[in-house]
Length: 220
Image (cartoon, rainbow, N blue to C red):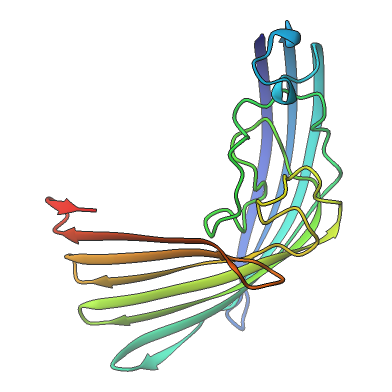
């Protein structure tokens, strides 16, 4: 099959600091997509082939994100505790009939938990309304630093059926995801990423990355 795609979008962000120290960010996004699929029946994987012919969709999204950092001295350094709350609202997005070439590898991670769209790529877009919440902790001391964060999202409107089972996003409550980073000077860094089942607390992902060496010469 052949797929032709045209996308256009406009995005507006406004971030303010309140007198109490909260960072409040408002975001609006409007995107228009136009697809032309030729010979959809020749697609290698029919589930991703889409509908033959020209199709389009509109993607309006609004979001409000609030962070409230608390910082102070601790253990000979500075610690910062930051709760975060995000509300994202969108209508049900028309994904049926749209070919899927770049949004197939779906998994909830710490890096996409607060994204407007948890699908990678452009071909699929997450609809509905959801509330995402999390907390991060940072301890900076001379010579080393520790950072940790954990979060989850709750679907308020929408079914989540656009996400396959096992991705951590298909139910009302998502799995818990997080990351911990320990850095010692410029010579050593270890990062732990995880995803924990929302019901049984079973570990669904457990990943460690280690880097040793200077910025010029290092091993990972």
